[in-house]
Amino acid sequence: MTEASHDNAAVLAVLAKDFTDHRFPRLLDLKEKVDNGNVLDDQEFEYLAKVLEEAARAMPLAVNNPEWHRLSAQVAKFFHTITEKALENEENLRSR
Image (cartoon, rainbow, N blue to C red; front, side, top):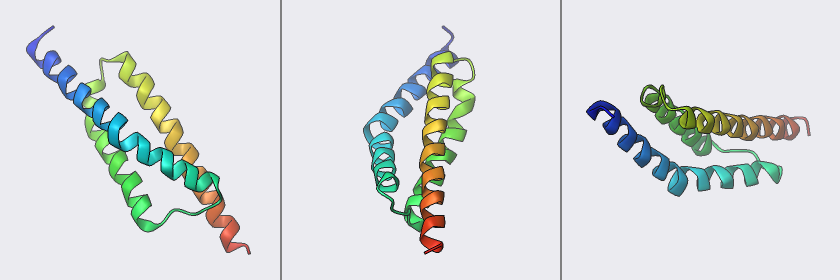
């Protein structure tokens, strides 16, 4: 393993731990909120945008890591589920 790839692996490990400890629990809370029929507020949408920006910045580090690709795909699907349900809830609220 080259020094650069070792550094990338270390950064990815830190990012994965941060995601597991902080980001994912908050995403689960947001999913529960929308699953209960609630809409997301501006701060929650800003949080989702921030997490996506951070993920986009990390992608160059993960280019050669198949495990990271699978995780990224699962997270993207989870984001889609949350935002799709949030949009549905918003549309339902407006149609009342």
